[in-house]
Length: 528
Image (cartoon, rainbow, N blue to C red):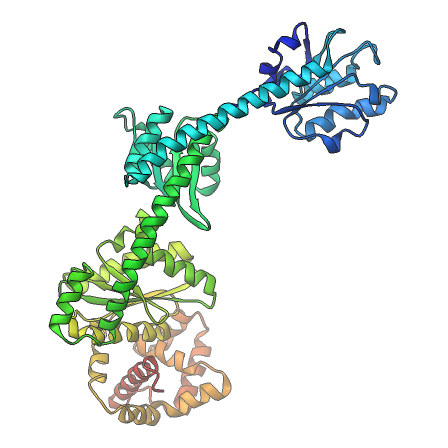
């Protein structure tokens, strides 16, 4: 631990000194000493230096002496030792008052004090302290590296660090959830501290750190987690040194595990993409690969597509990467456990085994709330869910269903949504028609004039039609839903009628609804 001003004045050369002001600053750390030989000493001072002087350079300038203590304090100098009587009769009262006010120690030296001897003893003390720290760092490094080279995991490294420091040590993930710990007693109090830390806001976490040590485990730009030592001051230099060494070794372990996992995942991802594209048709090939890649794919499986609708590529990349790397990132994404997730065509695709349509819909209805919390409510998230796929060679069909539900949902819903294929059975009927030209012609016949008008004039009457259909063509409810005046909604409805759309109950209205759903489907598959 670094020496303080109070430690310095215990040195033999400092016999018969007097602390005449600023006693509150005796705890200031001292890493060196400087002799004041020129008036403009400030540019030559380093932080935590103890200044030793007769005040000769400024003895004839009351103004400079009045400014000295505040200037030294602002430069974070540890304190000042003044030898009076030779050039000044006594230490000016203004300096004493300033020092007391600022908590800046002034030490009065005896008349026979040798300034060079004082400086040499301080420097010798600092050097010895530095050597002790280096030896301690080397000891910690050697002990930890032996465990690392033996192939031990992070749990054993945590135990070794706790043993070296005789402290409770917690290893946390990047969101401050506990990974493992080495605790000297069975008390749950420390885990409660960890839980509180994880729940605090960022601002409160910084306040919380003042009572404990929270040290990041990083490798380059990658943050893997933290070493947490409760009830330990950051001023304990030896503990900080040990934690710095341990953090580097933890980072190596995480980085190695991450690299291995990424390599394995890349092969798995290629296989899953092949399944989604229908490139795996042999059952023997499928069974061999799920064994090799350790993919326990048990059918039926749902295909789920998650897409972020934003032009901000930075936000999109961060969002997708966090979900893909969930097992290295956060226990708060535990809803992705035992699911196979891959990035494909600007979306995240998940293979999810669920019991039935309702359960998987309910699950992702909860998940989308958590995802919105991660990216913010202003960014739209779409989740499309396929029908349950009963065999590996139908996953390509399920993939298309999930993607189409995302694309259709993006047109229908203004905000984040979950769209389940089985809840939209009309699309299942539409996709059974192989000749899409028939579908296109039907849409053109029923909605063509309206679609063209919107394109040419930049209007959104097609969206108004969608709202009317959703609310059974009730103008009052549609005006309330869209927050527009009833007369405005009536004008829009009349304009839609003028563009050839029959809004009256009957067969024509039913055909309009059917045509609009075909339009959504064709738009989702880029056929219109």
